[in-house]
Length: 465
Image (cartoon, rainbow, N blue to C red; front, side, top):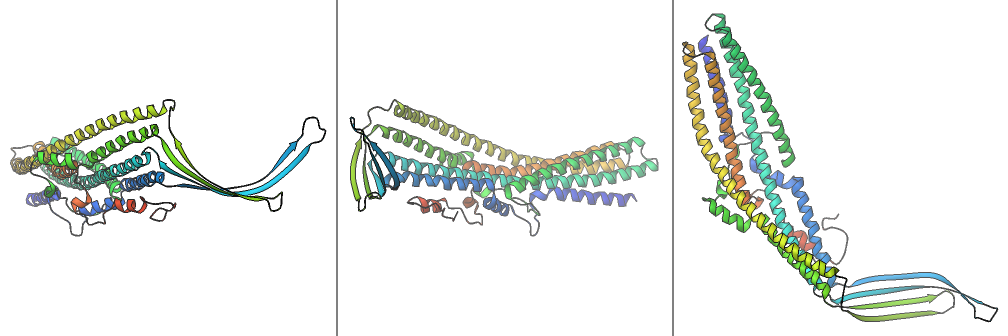
């Protein structure tokens, strides 16, 4: 009887080992891979798609700015009737006149020179587009990292739940054996109570693990866009990692999209100063009008009026508003420069922090694996000693719980190792679909930009909206 019980306990122990090894590389046939999940997030994540739509809206600023180079054309039309009562002093009579008529006309205004305001506005809009493109790339990084993290959290919490469920089965068997031994007088009622208490605690741990998994599943659905089913083990991004942290830092300071976006924002703010200063310079424009008149009062009364006028406008004083706008733009340049410095410091800190977490996770895996191996040996020894009366039931239960805790720590470290590798690549600025070689149609922001940058009119978007 005891041999059969020991055999069953060993089978349960093997099941626990399998659960602990789930993150270490044992795949599932036909399962979703982490790259497959990243592809789905890249295609359907609402935050990323919203950022793409925002970039397309920013593209339109270039077309708006270029409108300053183009003429403004307006058609005019009027129809009406007028009444005039005329009375000369000293005369008793008065004259009433009724006139009615209609006219149509065309007005054209063309700016010749506006103090380079349009030129600098176009350059500013282009810098804003480039900055927003980098912000989109940064959002892409954030989305892919969140997807990878959600994927690994589901794997981790699934493995931990399996460990805790297996632990309940082990403790149930332990309680059964302890009860049998109590019935034959080998142990006391205290041993049975200790086994029952451990089993109750294990069931509580299962409930907590189920709650954690439910939360991770909800996050997975939010980020990736669908419920997870069978997930294959994740893999760290070692192929994208340099060998040293200073190399990762150099790449980040040169390539990180947040830094590049901030530098384009500085360019745009400097151009805003020039746009504001343009209001101090003279403007030159040409206006042309054509007007056709028809009278309804007198038959055959009609006329045609055409004119073309050049106008030079030299600003003298604007009440200080233009001066204030210029000073404000200059202060904004200083603000955005400081923000760019802050972003650069944030990127530097992110690289160092992520690299440290990666190295710590690697060391933890080695340590926790050794801990698991040692605790497995210790548990086997305690169980054998308990069989001959040298250990108590509480010793066995404590050893079992210690082994469980070390396996949970190992699973967590394996998850942290993979997530930290993604964090380092993100901090470097390379966690994008292209660097990851995801099998997906890459979003090209220049397509929409090229479609609308020189547009002269039309309210339909390129995609038909």
